[in-house]
Image (cartoon, rainbow, N blue to C red; front, side, top):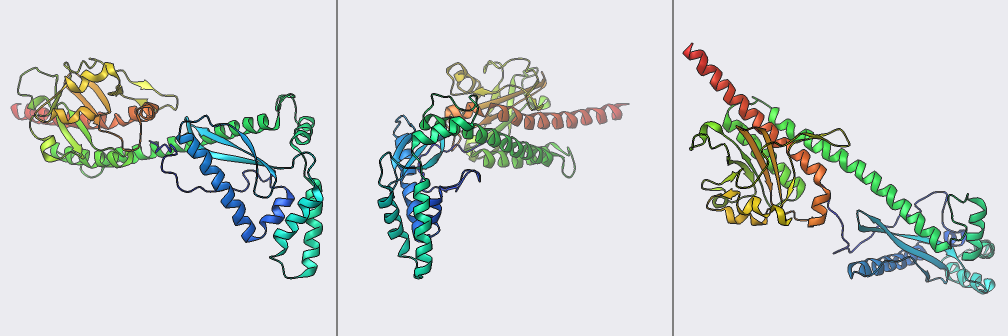
Length: 390
């Protein structure tokens, strides 16, 4: 799972200078940023520009790359970096100067801004010389892109591209690298969570009694609820010897939960497999990363899945669960079936939830373990009974 940042409520940003050691600030800006007070002015200006872009994104405006004049009169470019259709960051690039600018005037302005923080005249003279040389090295956007096209092969930069085009392409490449790394780290964290969580079932006397399995299941569901930021999570599991109507294997009682109040879990709350129109066989699938995905994943916000809860969930408090978001059914055999019902996510929208399908499918492994342990307990009880009869 991942808490997608939508830009809502963003109040602070972290500036990373620079993102590549080979592409540092122009020497003029390096000199200026040596002074703490000057560096803070640049930082506040960048943050102000970042806020303006995020605010435009939140208003639903098209977020485009744009050039602007910084507070020191230099030309900079800025644009968004997206990941999973969400604006994640802002990339800045520069620093250039416009055609026909008076370089002597610009150098004197920088000298005046920086020199006030120096007390040694000798250092000020050296600083003035450095600033004048740095200003003379500044180039215009057109000259910069012309030099870039000479040094890079056509496969890297289109010969008709503008500076803005090059920056936009670079930002998309950075976004792709960020998303790839994020997905790798996300998968590693999720796999570790699932491994550690499922291992809880095998601690101590395993499987133990039915009550032991139920207690461990509630502990595990508590971990799932916290990790996924869910309002509640409930697990339904078939208990063949407890079904009151002989042969009615469609009745799947509530076995364990986390986040439900006593009255919400009370009564004969159960999932009716047939009325929920769940398939009689759920195949095991193997994901791209080699993980086995047991069962299916039903997103309850989708219109054709509405009946799963409205008609399939029965009991005095069944109306409470109309806000459930996902059902993960598991079918080991006609006698051993189960399902995990997930309540609303506190931080995910409907589109974001569907992106989590690979992880949600893996969550159904929890129901597989529970049903397997219940089967072991039932099998052991039958074996002992048969031994006594013998």
